[in-house]
Image 1 (cartoon, rainbow, N blue to C red):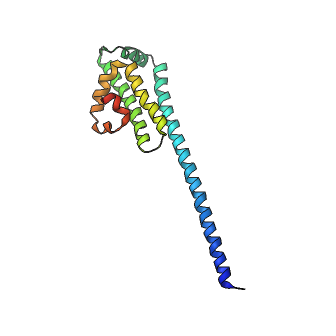
Image 2 (cartoon, one colour):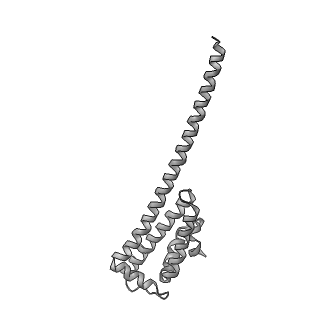
Image 3 (cartoon, rainbow, N blue to C red):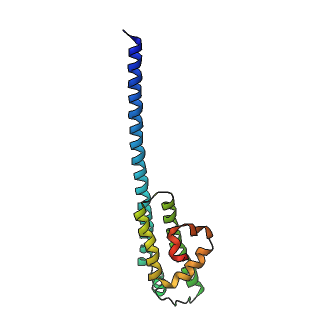
Length: 154
């Protein structure tokens, strides 16, 4: 019995086991990353759904949104001003979450582009909120690093 040959065989088997383990870990990491991205995408979509549910089910917010379709929208009361500011902050928070998810590679680029287009759509659909959105966004100068806010800041 040649102990050197047995030792060499053991080293080869050990190397094969290490390579197999690394391949398995690589597949597990890849799967975990896909699951994490999918989870973030679902969370963002749920946040968007929550905004639309709020509009659909809350008569006051729906009334505000209807008024925002007018580019010459004038705030009629302090309560309405607070409501507008809160609604704009809700949208900005949603868009910021999307920008952060993109910058951290948590969503696919094509998904991010859809969300960027959503900003443009909302600004054209509700032009009466543009001034409030711009004013609020300018209070946070670091947000201009996010592509999603370009339609607002341009």
